[in-house]
Image 1 (tube, protein in one colour):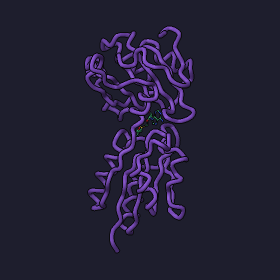
Image 2: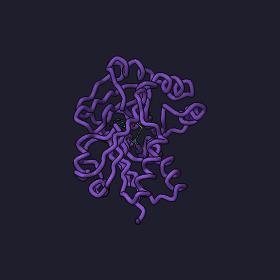
Image 3: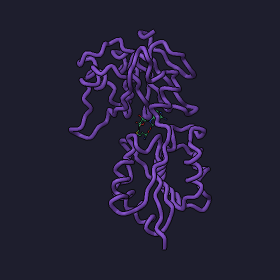
Image 4: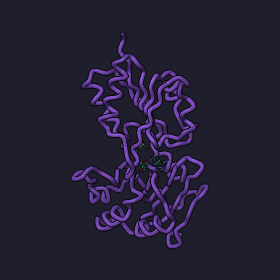
Length: 251
Ligand code: SAH
């Protein structure tokens, strides 16, 4: 029997139109699809009707499928000759544990390939009309997690001094710590911030504020996960799009 292959596929931020053509094509030929819970249902229509679909929850705080189980299943199905898709929100290689899965597949001798997705940090910024780089205001952009493994926290002091736009993932419940660390490291309290919940989906919400009000406003406006926090000069006075909430003190 010929051995199968595992595709680590990015489903994008939620809007099915932001799925790549390649992702749709690969979904259409898979025998087995392991789906993360951040993936929109509307994207599942691309899966073959007779494919086996396994839902593997990974949402913070909820019961999640152990990573070891997921990796064992990927290997077993591929070794049985099947075409397997591991479908993840956004891009598989941005905070999606795609790197760990690729390493495991590689050491198990299983063929694998990544199919890019639009990461939610990009989608959130675009939804808010915020360019992540700008010749005048930001020479680069950093994708950073607010929820790192113990002992692996980002160097917020270095980031505060970098002058780069910060795109913070997994920050909805941790914005107070992010705000305090950045201000303590010298980032001005008035630095513009945009928070986008459910970017690219019909229920998308945006909050525009400043760094010193971030945590209070997130609570006041009941912003919840999944949300992206964009921090930097590029977030100032940009075009306001649908569903935007303004913090009184930021306007
Ligand atoms: N691989 C994913 C990120 C997974 S980590 C990607 O590339 O986008 C999960 C975090 O992604 C969430 O806590 C949130 O910060 C962000 N996220 C995912 N989907 C989102 C969406 N539609 N809107 C805003 N943030 C989102």
